[in-house]
Amino acid sequence: MALFSRFRSAGPSTSVNGPSRAKASLGSALLAAVLLAACGDTARLPPGADEGVRPTLLAPVTSWIPTVKIAPAKGWPDAGAPKAPAGFGVTALARGLSHPRWLYVLPNGDVLVAESNKPAPPPGQEPKGLKAWAMKQVMQRAGAGVPSADRITLLRDADGDGRAELRTVLLEGLHSPFGMALVGADLYVANADGIVRFPYQAGQTRIEAPGTQLTDLPAGINHHWTKNLIASRDGGKLYATVGSNSNVAERGLEIEEGRAAVWEVDRAGGSKRLFATGLRNPNGLAWEPRTGSLWTVVNERDEIGSDLVPDYLTSVRDGGFYGWPWSYWGQNVDQRVQPARPDMVARAVPPDYALGSHVAPLGLAFADGRMPPPFAEGAFVGEHGSWNRRPLAGYKVVFVPFTDGRPAGVPVDFLTGFLSPDGDAWGRPVGVALDSRGALLVADDVGNTVWRAAPR
Image (cartoon, rainbow, N blue to C red):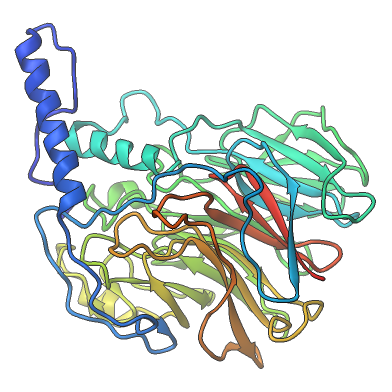
């Protein structure tokens, strides 16, 4: 059911019981790494079949060792940059950042960058065993093993040349910050364990005042640690994403309380309620311009093959349940999750639009008419890229065309070139946002850069 569920030994160790035990443990770990690289299935669907409003869903593939294929994180070569469509230019708004994950554009045009990574688990809750050790190696190779800078940096491009002249730390000493939202004179930051409010004045480049905790959010092990944030149109509510604590509840449902969900938070008093559930790992949040409805992108479950399950873009219904962990894409039952809950499966809302299996969508921003056709109406999605699919998928920013507030067409590549010809990751896109001039900003947490793609 879970990755390495049949392994019970610990990872590499320098045990006091002697070098032979340490060598055996290390040998087991190296063997596991070799097996990871060599085993697993290859996608059978033709490109595009797992995308759109009606994706093809093949039968699950079960394997003792799941598919693992990694694009090793290398960073960009000198003068390297992503590729945009004809008629667009790409500049680096800022380079040399520390694992930039998320972006927020202030009303005056300043750009906030959350430099962040996964927090350490609480004492006594550290994942143990060969599975945990092996997954740590996988994530480090993919570029996710760097310490969290725990800060928000402000970038200012006063002359409009696409390169920030001012770069300063707005906030520091945070706890794996991610989502940000400004309402009036209050700046809200979603840490890994809760939402914090800071006073903000227009044009401010440094906040010294201490933050005030508005509400806590599910934390602990934080298998999925990112907490995104968006304010309602009237500013009275905040909406926060919380990912699951596992792949498919293999650690038990008790530690999933309040997770795999979007929360609605009262901005005045901090009270909150579950707005939508069954969303395994929601990240980007955005208001669709025509309908005013809330949309998100979701990372679906793993370990049932390269063709399953498509990650997705969907509207978020108040009270909606989207299947996790019992089912996917509506009523497709995940047999690994026991005991079965046919009552929950019957309630599951099918997502609106498949982005492809294991593409890892994180960033989401709707076009607002300032981009030229065909990018004037639709959604930009930052796809961080797969680690468990053969061949690799994602590692780009795509555009999903919309008509009358709904997806209408196939995803269109907008920013590509994040992978080298040898399959290394020069960069990995995460958060996306439209700046004050209508250009698309992209946070790249392997290239440690914020890119800006604008019409020439």
